[in-house]
Image 1 (cartoon, rainbow, N blue to C red):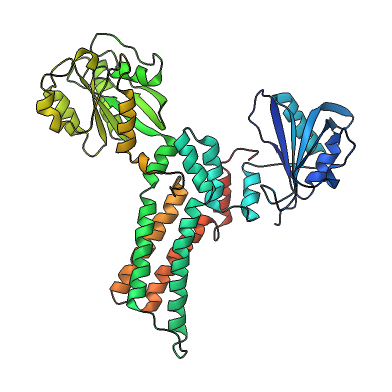
Image 2 (cartoon, helix red, strand yellow):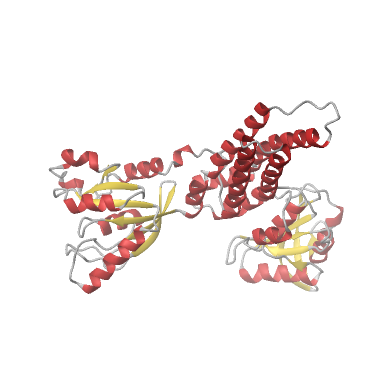
Length: 456
């Protein structure tokens, strides 16, 4: 690797804690750490094998800073593929900063965002999708998002991409050999072979592409609007899901006039909830503004919770709201079930779609709501070893690869020459190699790792 500097950074979150870790990586990591760390046993860090730890003290010149344990990892069997030392001192903003400053005084260079993981990528310890999964693991907000990120860190997406790439490279080399060396006794490329490989690759790429919405939901949560007529219990539902009094609740219709938002975790699903104003015709200019904002929110949400008042008859206004949702996924919540069910429910049930009976006041039915959301958004299909697209860069690479694969198939079916078909096949391969980072520009690498936190 051309960069021969030894980098250092604080690897633990800012603030007070039991332990703070200052990490060094690079060819001089042991020598730099040895200048600031002195073991109680008198052993030198540079003479120790990897995967060992020494107890001692950290110094900045003649100034004693703290007690610490130094853990050592020798190249290439380390996270970055370089020599690594982790100085574990007492956690706290002052001490960790002081230890880091001592390392910089001893010759280390402050690491940039994600530079440790970037070095791991450049040293072949992981591919680009696995590197991106590191930040997804750190930011995971639920067990399911953590499992998906761990699956990508273990190589689920890159293995899938490599399988498709391998089939296409085999086809491409066969096509190129057949075109370039017609006088050689090379087996003829059959139409069945071309058709089969391209159709299989197209189907696999489209399948991967279809996981993007799920990956986005796991990573960022579901933009969810709570809508309904005034006084049906929308704000009570908001408070029940949030676990505290987030919205004002009164018996006066039209209390909620502005949108109230919160992020809540419902089981393994993260909901970015918006409690909207009751949608109805009104002469109140302030309430009119709230209704307008509620309708605007519907255009950008991924899920709608349509709340009906279970203590009243289902109104035509309720059904009209359901129709207005169009293609947006909707779960109809019959609220206030502690007071009974609407008299005309059985009659109108077929028009309500997915329905959950719930009492926002008592919390009964929340578990059923969680199950319906998981089912509606197809989150049950995500297993621990699923290959799920988790960011826009991955989606773009796979989308372009799918487009080129489709072009290759159309070129073959249209009777174009093998040369023309192979150009599209090679373009598909290029996109997949960019996905995993095997062929990628420095600009893309910088963009990926600039989103990381310093110290990782």
